[in-house]
Image 1: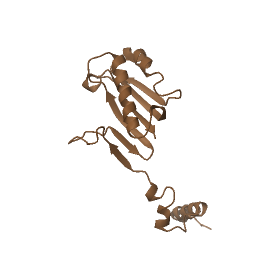
Image 2: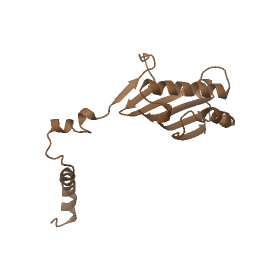
Image 3: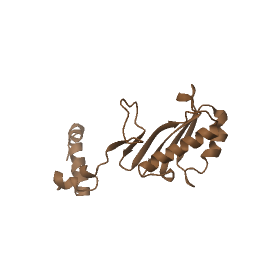
Image 4: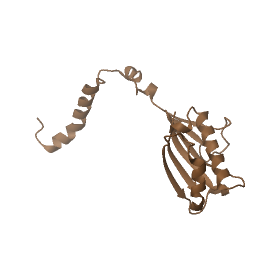
Length: 164
């Protein structure tokens, strides 16, 4: 029995560890045995950076594709050429698809999409191109108009999170 609150607080972390270990059966495993278990350090996900074309630039400002285990993070992709919102959206979505496929994912495995528009006036036209590109059960999406515009004069920029 723990006679007072201070004793309880000082002993609570140890009690919790013992209880959790008993529940999972992990207390009797050595470090090397734990590494061989699912979730052990040999199986822990780690961050990997992927570069279209293979090699990173000399001084990268950001990574275009990062994976962490089965999660895939695609940085914002814009369209930096003359054209309307339809051409820009189509180009960006094709690039997103290419990046996803390069790391073993697909548009159907996208969980979250952020769409940044240069102008909300382009919302309907962007949606017309966007519709159906992520399968019949698309991930969640946020769409905003960037107050100062999109860098590089793109009319749209899109980033996403997917699984493999």
